[in-house]
Length: 202
Image (cartoon, rainbow, N blue to C red; front, side, top):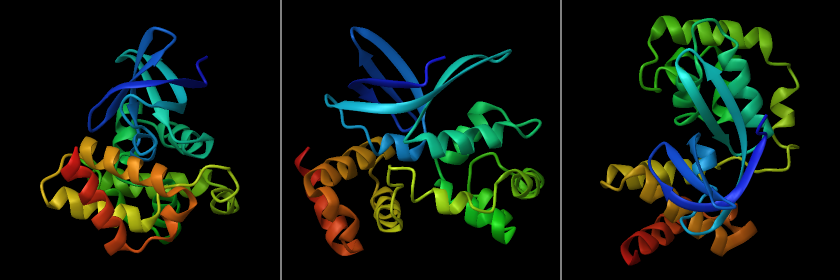
């Protein structure tokens, strides 16, 4: 099984990344958090899951093992496949999902394209039984930071200005690389200005 890949980012779309791994190109359907770790022409390591089903063969990319585990919990629900689970993770972070399940907030799940009320209710009910009570605590001990709420808000603002998801993800990744640990300390205004500067210069 392919558990992770380290390679150079050849290209990105709003939902996928192509990694050059020792001359071989792997296309991964990625979560929002995984995309935020990728910058074109730079190296990236993504946690992966290879799914072989009647629908085909798909390679999914995640930011870390915690996100991969959530993906597996979602796909463990009858009738929900890998592509649907990745659609959810392209809109919601793991923390968003845990929070929605704990509050039985079906509206949060319905923010994902193609997720209706009945599916959202089923997600809340079945995930509540499969997510350990201490899972949320483990989010902060997994070693990889999940996207901050500030960066999520800035990303939404940039998309509302007409920038595409791939461009927004790349810009925020470049800003994150430049700021390092200070990235998560930025307020929304400062982060928005930095991301806009990067977008306008590219």
